[in-house]
Length: 388
Image (cartoon, rainbow, N blue to C red):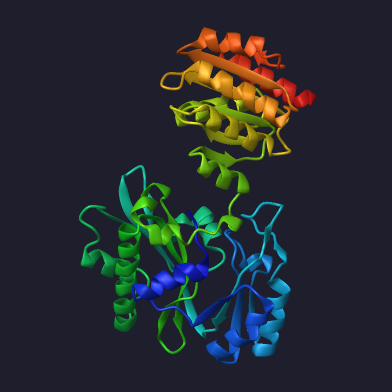
């Protein structure tokens, strides 16, 4: 789960990480009052969307004086911002963060995340912080320092100090950064985060160390332990199909292809997408209905897939174990009738009650293309998508 920058800064503040004075606004009427509350002569107006690359897309702008800041904020509110991470459709800016500007001397990068291959936490740090950090990581990876720590025993004090010394040698700077590293790691572990990032962490001209940006992503599977974190979710920033899928405990991720997929089991779903690509097509989604899906979940899965106008065919690939093939078939039939199926449907069933499931599909009167194996199913789905 992602949250907005202003929300991440609120968490930073609770944990003692310094951030500039800021206010979130979501209406034009609130702008002037927020600017007066912040005070000062220079402001940074930041679009609050769940997509990186805002700065290069005009979503982060410095304003001289309250009048200019108010004008920029009013222009941003309600506008569509297209960044390298938003996709060509962009994101509508519904919230703005108004921040007090700081005089920057140096910029750094600092983040805590999980190295899944090593099953350890890792602190990423660099003296090359700022908007081009992704390019630095790609072209000059040696400039990104990695410090691993045990997730059970936590980060040792000497490790936090080593991270700080990798960024600078001034004693006051090292002390401040050491404390921030410790706090970032505490947030990461205590709140079940998957990423806690500051880009950039800055040294100001008066010697202060401040996080002028903040990003926190949370592990969905840990949210049940943190209802206060779950309350920060902004469904307007999420794919509405993914929001709908969560209501039915379905695992859905929208993609850019034309072959819709409905599969039970994450591994089988990944394999299905791979075989679709080997057949020359592109999957429109990842959708795992789980091992024990009921008829209403199968119906919901169908409707979510068909809500994507790019879908030109659907491939259902089910291995019946806990979820029996006849249950899946019943859900397919009901969903197809409810939504008035408009694209070709390829179904491959194997496992428990497979013959009963196939018979239900044959007798349904719905146009269904059966397949006996995954390769054949993928090839048929790709061919039919090209003809739609």
